[in-house]
Length: 512
Image (tube, rainbow, N blue to C red; front, side, top):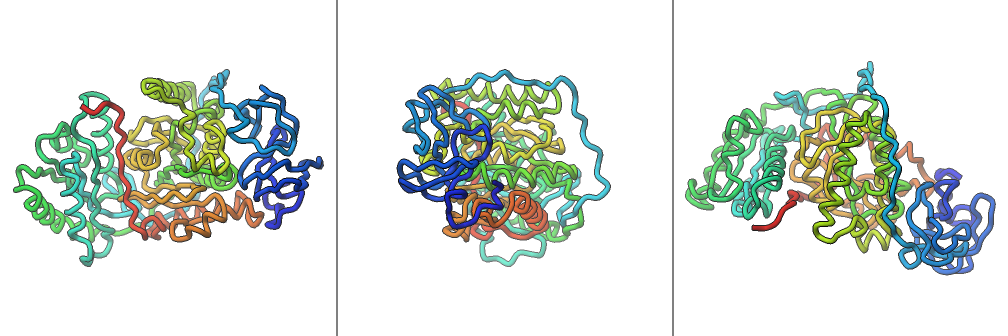
């Protein structure tokens, strides 16, 4: 039964969703009560106890130690014998780390030819060939010691009338930049801040330090400067302290305002869109509704030469074998797998596991472990080949489906995507994550109708209509794609209207 055939009112035939013929579970579309009759693929069964919406119910006998399948893939083993109609969750489903025989590509998938016709959007053309979807002036703190002053500078423009074509002055405060071990950790922070400073959504920028921190502002101002024009560095120690730095920064920003105002939105091909893909506060419906719909949008972008960037390495674990099959060549496959293996070693240093990822909210929403969560999360990337794999905050240059190595922690993941050059982000959520970014519009896609209705101020798209039988995955995917074009042209998202500006760089090393 297709999801569009599922009526809103629960019946024996539509109260659960059976995703794959190989699955020995189905997902409750609505809360199931003890004694309720179900019919799955023509076979009747009775529910043995309460099953919350989004949770799993067995549709066949499962012996102790036998695998449990969802999406046709293994998500764990039964801790005990499970009867048809039983609720399946962490109490009777054991997690185990799977070993895959990876199917590496043997050839090379070429980049597709440019299509004859490409949709357009209205954006800000930059000197390096990229196109911005917004036009901000950024004040970036080099360290925590300058974070408060950076915020004061941006706040000093609150309430002031901005000239046309200027979206605002935004601060990038954070808690890093000093007490770092010199090496990969400082290099990653510098790559992250450089990506923010030179972002296509930024017209001009200030890098602000205290003056004595590990992350010296000189790194951003020398021959390897992240941007070639409209960048100024200053420190509190050389500007007269906090008040002096605020006044000095305001003078620079006022000088830039007229230049930024002169920048006009022009028609640009949608192939210039680099769309970050993220999910947060996932539930069991994420892999049924919002993520597959976003995958349709990702495929449409890839078809026209745009880019869709899947992040969250922790939420690819358990689905990596499916992504490796799609790699453009063996080199891309091995680089992607290297990020998985590297993350595993990173977790092991702290006694952690990939299965620490699902949060209490994820589990309350029906996701039992990381295998189940990852299989649903990977659907955001659609079905096109994996063209490239890049490290955290690394510049994204490839069209098509790209992977970026980031944590699953949403503000850190979004920061990496932004620093890599994503000029727009699509974010699916089942539990209602409220998040945005200072300089990039974030489109929020609710996985279920209840979350959408409870948090309408935060949500832009209701993918829950898929599970309710009102719309198809393809229809919602087209809606997301069309909204991407509108938002790229200036339409404001809910996160922008609410003023969400989360920015958290990834600290990978010890505090010194």
